[in-house]
Amino acid sequence: MQTVSGTSLIDRFGMEYFQGASVFGAVSPAAITYLLDRGRVLELERGEVVYKPGDKGDRFYVILRGSLSFYQFYRDEFAYIRDHLFGEEMGFVAMIALHHRIGKAVAAEDAYLLEISCSLFYELRKKFPADFGLFLLNLSREMARTIREVSNIIVENEIAKRGTSISSEASLPLAVHDSDFSDLADDQ
Image (cartoon, rainbow, N blue to C red; front, side, top):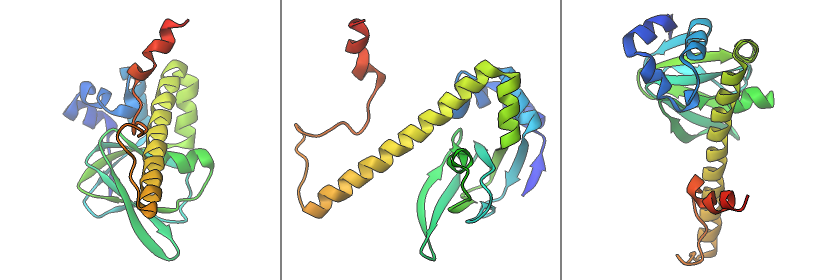
C-alpha cells in the first residue's frame, strides 16, 4: 500500500470520471478536488488489507478504482459480506457510529482509495457547506440502500425457514423508486 497524489489521479482519469462516483453525485468539482488534495489517496494491490477488526473507525474510504471485499468478524470467524465497488464508501458507518472496526476490508483487485478522516470530513463541512450536504446525502442514501438489502435478506431467510413463499400478487417491492411516490407530489 502506498500513498499517491490525488491531483495525479484527476490528471489521469479526468474530473468526469470522479463525478461518476455515486458518493460524489452532484458534488462540485472544486469540492472533489479539495477531498482528493487533502485526503490520503492509497494505491493497493490485490489482497492488501485496509483495516481489520478492532481498528479505530475514525475515517472512511471512497473506492476510486477497483473494489474491496468486506469480511465481518464474529465468534472468532470471518464471513464474507460483499464487495464494494467504484464510487462506494467503506467504513462510513463505523466513523459515524463512533465504533471500532468489526471486520476487515481487503482489496479484491488492484485499487485506488480516498481516505477521508473525521477532520477532513469536518473541514469539508466548513469550506463547502452545500457540497457537504450533497456528499452526506449520497453517503446516507448508500447506507439506506444497504439497510434495505439487509432487510430483504432477513425477510427471504425468514420465509425460507417457514417453507412458504410470497405470492407475486402479495409481495412487497424489494426496491422503491422515486416514481413510486409521484402521486404524492400531485396531492400538494
